[in-house]
Length: 322
Image 1 (cartoon, rainbow, N blue to C red):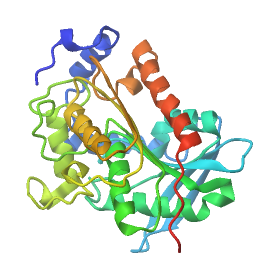
Image 2: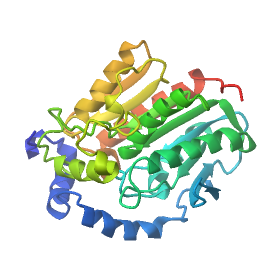
Image 3: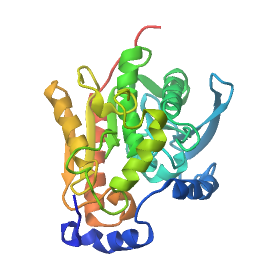
Image 4: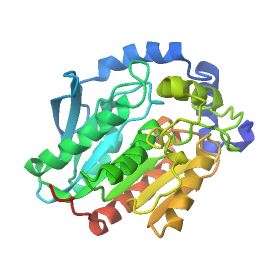
């Protein structure tokens, strides 16, 4: 799927040209270099929110850092949101998504838990999913101390974080330890097979087929390009979406993930679920972040916040008995 400049939304064309020139694709070397720069973001909150870092212990006795964001004036009976950052599973920190987090907290007084999950260049699947699930269980157990109501736990994330959010809904449903009321996987990374029209030979800005292949190879390790990939690694492989929580997402029309996101939401809707999906014409991957001040990015944010607030008023799921 060749993406020429005429296919790109006019507001995004200048940024697209710069991205293509300076950062045509992600490689393993670039991931490792970017990781060093990203380390400087850790532990530095730039949002006007209450911010706390919690350390929990993994089963192997290593440590997982959780970033807790909440209103400066705490409220009671608020939603608890587990938010998972993007970065192709190989890059990123919770702090990079503070603009997303700030909007959610200001709109609903919710409490957000953002785990610093392990990255694929250090530990491939299932490390990131295990960390995300541990953070979700922490939110269930400790959320009430922050005013969180346990019947309104939500998950969300962007890009790879969106893929993790979808995987978590599958895992949580099967494990039956924690119930999720709502999911917000924004332009999620779902299908390792990369055989849809939008994912084939896509040369779009910021994220293209080359970056996609590199990231799936790093994330899946020896499972890459085999038929042994679990649904918890690549949720597009799951055929039965019955019983999953309501969902909201958006995706760009020219990005590699377009077709897999549309397919997932269509199949989720076919089960009778309440889903909301919008495809933004002429938009590339992550347009809402890299071109945040454009009208179309504001439109995407408004769409998301409208349905997030609807979810806070309408979606509740009781936790399973201990």
